[in-house]
Image (cartoon, rainbow, N blue to C red):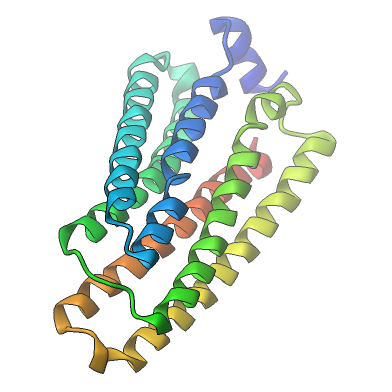
Length: 227
């Protein structure tokens, strides 16, 4: 009997169910990033404002779930390592929503246009980032079923494959980020120094969404390898 099976029998609820609920909320928050960036590209100020509001509200909802999960993990020596695994994954996937909110606030700080040269690379970049979010969401929502399968068998093998594909997608997003940054600095004569600074942070925060998706996947990898 695995430690997770024992945990479920003792406490009557999989520890992964609230973790999955949190991931769903994270996805809802990050789900407004394409709308935000499309509005940024087209200079649709009204939709920019509504997208920022939606991202922030959904990120707050994720925080509520996060805090509830933290406050309600069973406390005993038996649960110590399980709880730490859950908290590590929770912190990593919460960072995905945090980066989306940071990105939104960067766009909010200083209204600025998007030069034509940056429109396509920015869109290409965020589309690749959003794919990592979709991939980690599809991995996390299988954690409860995976724990019931004692982190072994066909589902575990499938998730390891999915995590490897997630890591490859994060690399693809990195390449798109570098391409966008090169185009940005190749056109720095058209953009003020302040805007270059903000643009750099925007690209980094967008990249951090993919980085944290990959980190979450690698923490789940450890569960598959060590449990």
